[in-house]
Length: 171
Length: 251
Image (cartoon, rainbow over all chains, first blue to last red; front, top):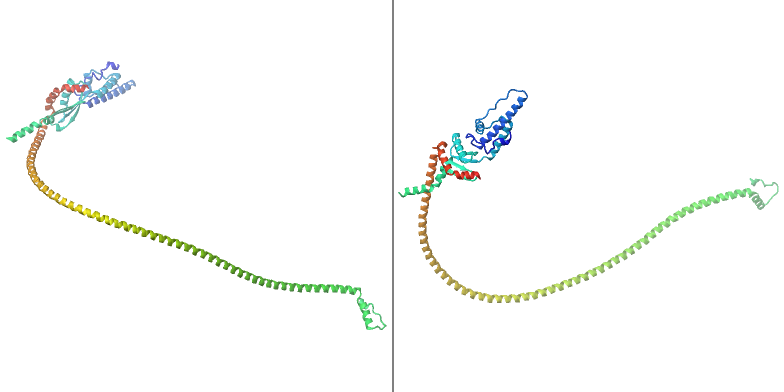
């Protein structure tokens, strides 16, 4: 099988449980490990050892292979997948999202689904924590920042609060 | 021996004949040879003795001559040394006298020269003293004139200063009045500024109070929402800015 027959990183569909760049790196590492195990098993089979066993895959890798209709049986295909995953890891657009509270997995997956459906299909999220934001999110794209936090909203309305206090004092 | 071989017994002979005959008989060739030998040995002995004596005398004489010659030479040498000493003494004395005379002459010349120099210096000092005295007298006269002029000028200046002081006093009195007026104005301005500062401080207090309330609100609300509760709002805000985010990601 040649590289042309395998999906490129631009066509990959990332499952919802692959959220961050670290998750993509983990996919690359796991496919490399599987490739090494299967190559070693193939060699052992040729030398007359016991029968080859199927490798155990993580849920993320299983979902990724299922969504992209990929299989790891052939060595060349595995090599092509590793290569494309490495490219995806390097080139996937990253959204830095800083929250006021710890982000749970379910919320992150929902956010990721929305981002990939709306912004970019291979986008990944880099998660940060900043309690001073109170609520909302502080979003940083490659060239801009978007402050959707409550702290940002209150800073914009600081004058209104002072006016209300003055009006209260006048009464 | 032939002495008894020529004697003839019987004929009387005179003593002289007997003596002559005896002499002839006595002195034969052998006897002559013996005599000759004896004489030779005797003569040699005498010569030797005489020579020894002569040698002794000669040695004695030579010793005496040596002694006398040594004495004579010593005397002559003493005389010569004494003469040389006397001449050397005379010569050295003469040379010393000449040198002393020359030194005395040179010292005298040097003294004369020094005396002449001192005399010249003294005359020069006298001349300079005279010049200085003249200059000093002239300067004193000039200073006297100058001081007189300065005194006159100072008199005028003192009078002018007195006028200026009067003017300054007058000016000071006027300034004091002006300061009093300014003080009143500054007092009014200060009161006004204090009132303004009070207003500013009150405003700042209100502003800080706003921040305190804001901080309280942030602290009170911050723990009330988890991400699930915030998610609709976050997605809504991101939806509102979707285009800007998409544009930025495409760059």
